[in-house]
Amino acid sequence: MTPILAIHGGAGTMRADTMTPALEAQFHAGLRSALLAGHVVLTKGGSAVDAVTQAVMALEDDPLFNAGRGAVYTSGGLQEMDAAIMDGRDRAAGAVAGILGPRNPILAACAVLASEHVMLQGAGALAFCREHGVEFAPAAFFHTDKRWDALQAELERRRLTAADTRDDAAKHGTVGAVACDAAGNVAAATSTGGMTGKAPGRIGDCPVFGAGTWADNATCAVSATGHGEYFIRHAAAHDIASRMRYLGETLEQAANVVVEELGSIGGSGGLIAVDGQGHVSLPFNSAGMYRGVIGVDGVARTGIYRETLVA
Ligand code: ASP
Image 1: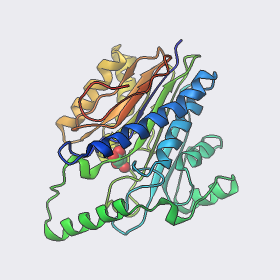
Image 2 (image 1 turned 180 degrees about the horizontal axis):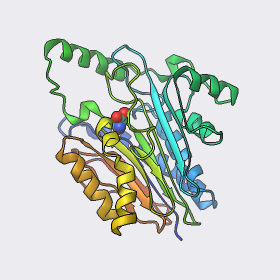
Image 3 (image 1 turned 45 degrees about the horizontal axis):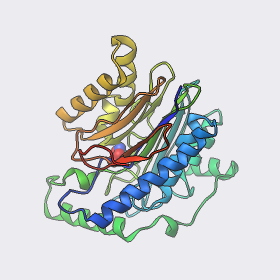
Image 4 (image 1 turned 90 degrees about the horizontal axis):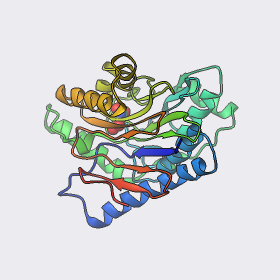
């Protein structure tokens, strides 16, 4: 079995006409370092679950991406983060929702995975994290002017028009990783600030198992990004696993159908998926999706729009 890791940094890519070469290079560099952070775990014989944790931590630490540091703001001007992790060996799962405090929300999800719980939210989740020694950071650590300005622009847009005229790029952002380790075990991790101007208390698909995050050795591991409500209502991640299981579809077939179907009903976004044989699929129905793959050759390949991944 050859270990493999795939990541995404959200399907809400900047429009190609507003992207600059310098910013594009920064996104590629951020994706590359996250790939390498996860890859080093796999090359040392580590587990898929540890690899996806490291990759997602790197993306959370990078303020370019909408998770952890650099998360977007709710309409109430706060940051509320969701994160989830699932281990395909035994379907052990842990998720947190609506939290602000843990430096790396994915580590809060890991702490839940290691407990008797599966999902914790809000104040109770934070108390749990404190009890379990999860590292916290002050609110200022998570702030970026870019996300604050995006909220102001969104609130202004709402004042001027009732219609939602935003394009994909304005709506999305999330980070995630899926991996298959040398033993053929798969895992998935997803972390997000959600959507700019989301209602306080709104929880997206990321921490909902079977919607934005799923892992089962028998089929696949999936981490999604996009308009969360659609992914929840269509149980997107679990639908891929079910198609493989009951229809005998390949990972590629199942992932493509689900993303296409979501697109046809207005659910823009994409996902990354890996199966227990190390096949990878990275479909999206939006203009782009920050993404990358790294296999045994140790070469990090990344992409933003519809181009072939570049080393
Ligand atoms: N799926 C995330 C959410 O709905 C946002 C995103 O991935 O862009 O919270």
